[in-house]
Structure formats: C-alpha cells, structure tokens
Amino acid sequence: MKISAQTQPAPPLSPPTLGTIALPIDGIVIGAAITMATAAWGLIRWFATRSVTHTDRQFEETKRELSEIRKELGDIRADSQTLRNEVGANYVRRDDWVGFDATVNAKMDGLHRRFDQVFAMLMESKK
Image (cartoon, rainbow, N blue to C red; front, side, top):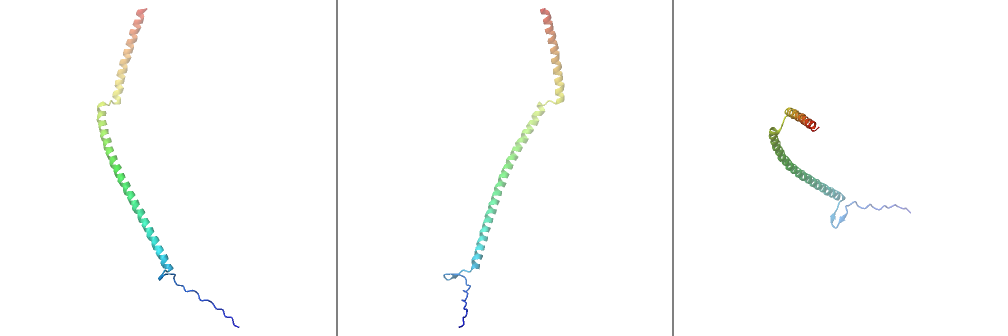
C-alpha cells in the first residue's frame, strides 16, 4: 500500500469581499493614507490661518499703540517748549546767583553788626 501525501491546496489570495464589493487591502491603506494626509493638511491650514489672524491682530494693536505714543510725544514736546519759554523768564544763572547771594549776605552781616552795637549800647545804659 502506497501512502501518498496529499496536500491541501492553499486558499486563493483574493481580497475579502463585502457583499459584491471587493475591498483590497492596498486600497484601504491608500485610502487611510489619503485621509490622514487630508486631515494633516486641514490642521496645517487651520494653524496657519490662526497664526496669520493672530499676527494681524497684534500688528493692528501695535499700530494703535504707536499712534498713541506719537500723540503723547507731541504733547510732551509742546510741554517742553512751554517749559523752555518759562525758564528763560524765571531762571537765574549760577554766576548771577552767587553775586546776589554775596551781596545779600554782606548786607545781613552789616545789619547784624549794627544790632550787636545797639544791644551793647543798651546793655551799658542799663548798668
């Protein structure tokens, strides 16, 4: 008796079927890859749009602040011009002040000597 080894034939390598539609594995992988790429593109576009919008808002805010600073600078310049005009009328130079101070101090010293003399005379008269 001869025993022959019978091997069973391998199942056919056909794509799984769903009803009558064939779903090849490669098609699913490609479809998933396209879906993920589309989702990634959508996220990148959303982040880029959001970033540009945020940058535009910051730019507008910076422009507004700059215009406020320019207005304040104009006010400061006007105030400094007014101060320059007033200082010229009310300012005494250091050299002039030193001379004036010396004159006033000399007069005060003279008055002090006279009062000392008057007090000395009064004290002698009471004795």
